[in-house]
Length: 347
Image 1 (cartoon, rainbow, N blue to C red):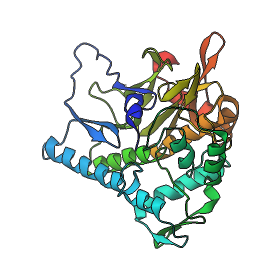
Image 2: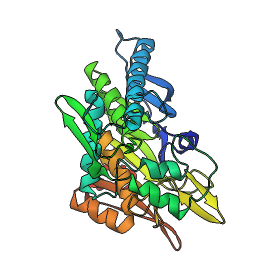
Image 3: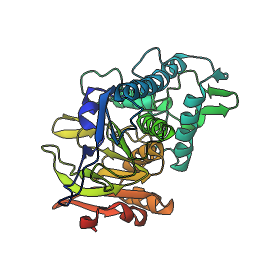
């Protein structure tokens, strides 16, 4: 669901856990780490004190099966996925869909409407045109004419979702849906739900930088995650946050981009203009009980920018952390709801 450049991005969170050293004499609990490839990126699952009746190999196979199913439903990179087949279908009547695809599409449409199209689940034609989609080519700025033509195909109001029986409908035959900004978060939630069904209480699930954490880590502390400083030349720590039974996702402009004639073009496309965003917001992190909601909201706020995005986040009581480019470097600002997640030494 993401290109090779996004494999390096891993959203904008440094996806290593900051497992702080315990105080002397504190017993480290057994930690099982499972890793693999999915959705054009990687995943990591950490489980503390895996139940003795559950073998790590079996759990990994079950996780892989969950992720493979989601990829087969929602990928735009797999030509035979359910979503790719829907995108190619020229019919404008109801098309049967899996319950999972319909549910995710419904949530994407809800956020599209909430943001009045700042996030638009049908923005795919523009993403592809700028070279950030499945068919990546030579990085170059498209012509104004091509942008105008692609924008005609963008518009979430032309998409309909029916829950029972699950089905999808598009008002114009060439409507194209891209779930890249929501599917990884959804996959994290599905894997986390599977762990909870197995009565695993202490875990962390990460897919391409989107994270869900519950309980305590091996050091018997809340899971600690580093948010990266949005610099293109190196990776460094910006702040540390603590998670328990919450998901987080980050959207940023500083790893997935191309340059032409000295100007940088970000992979974050504003559906309203058809161009990459040009504001000063470098990254935004959102925390939510649902990683899927954190994922899609992070993209929406990244499009809206530092001022409009912050106002939107406060108005909707979102837990969001903004890193903004200033004249003398980066500065950050957090919504009132985000303060609870800052690690103790950062408060």
